[in-house]
Length: 355
Image 1 (spheres, one colour):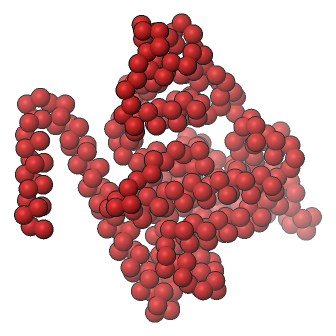
Image 2 (cartoon, rainbow, N blue to C red; image 1 turned 90 degrees about the vertical axis):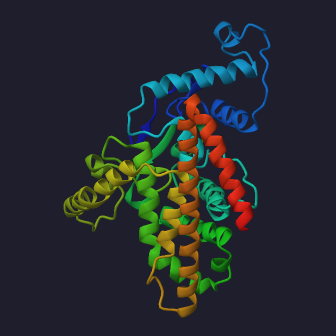
């Protein structure tokens, strides 16, 4: 078969069929979104049955309280078996969730100190949706319906779908940067195209490796577009529709060398880094705003400005995450919690007096 199939399992929360993973375990998107929304709203839930055991009696019951508690208990059970190098649940709540077209993002206040990062995360989700929809229009009828139904998440990449999918990515990135950076939007179309073209290879690889490290952390699969994957063990499938004039033996050997030497090694680095959502979108944007990316003085100044903004917001984000981790650790200790609160009050008073 040409396509990579994912066996359907049952959501560990509601028991409905699903072929998705959310927050580290088999879970349908509906339950994942429900949990995140409930958590963010801090809603007070009450059990319908009154005995806090609705789901155990009937997995299809609509009791919000029991559904929420069931999700939390499954998540806690998974956390106990999580490797030490994984982020904790608290850290994941600080923005480390993987970004794709299904990501639920809570809208942040416009006064956020990391407003650029927040805009980029929202825009990246839109980019993912654009790429997925566009690529579904370039695939076969069979693959289209399989992707639409969710019976597959990826198809094996082939020679002929690389070019159209790359164009979709390029167009999507134009919209992504136009919606997140005012000064990019104000450039002429020629300037936008030139800047993006000069940095497109790095942008494309950054995105592909980020997603490959998430979906295929333990094997040699890499992602060549939003809906297609490639493995060095299936080079023949990739070359199945290449033009007759192409020497398949030479092409196959060259592809294996390049993939093994570069992409798989870099995927390992991405996996080790475990980038949060904020860190990833910042890295993606820094790939566009590279120093020496343009000889035009005006564009060079724009690059410097945007790099400074991104790095400053990354610093704020990192400091805030460290602050929350420290707060969590201190509040777990009753002897330290009062010291923590007094320290925070002192910091706020100092800030007011110096402002």
